[in-house]
Amino acid sequence: MNDSYSVKVGSDFDFKLSKDDITFLDLIKTGDQTFHLLKDGVSYHIAILDSDFNKGTYTLSVNGSEYQTTIQTPVDELIEKMGFASNGSKNIDSITAPMPGLILDILVEEGQEVTEEDQLVILEAMKMENIITSPRNGLIKKIGVSKGDTVDKKQLLIEFQ
Image 1: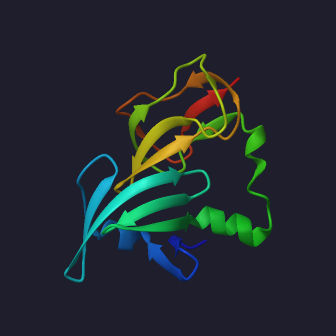
Image 2: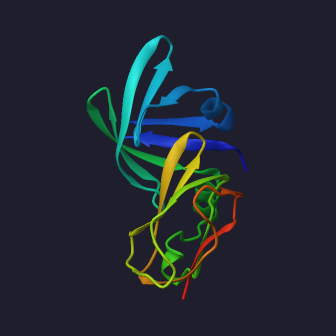
């Protein structure tokens, strides 16, 4: 399995980014969901307008123009190549960290009822804030992390009842 991420912008622009490409970006976080990127001497102001981390879809504003973007991780690509359905989320009993990162915020409490797509946790990883949403309706049984925790890939974040 390779370590590159497939990025699709709109319907006609596809490219791959390696972890090194992402690490060496001249990218500065300027606000909650805003960034400044300097690439080949050109300045880009980027805002994340909408995101669905579970589906890998993002709506971005780049210098005032809006773009629909899809990001596939190496695991997503492997699942697709093997022909497995990646929509088995309805039977998920827990959520683990998809990558190493820092817990910026926990948006739910133990015992709270949530519905599919409710925001649960904000995880900062690779210079981006990722909002982890609920894959199903359910009751939060256990929260395995605290705000400010550093997490490893596959570490338990939320357990459903």
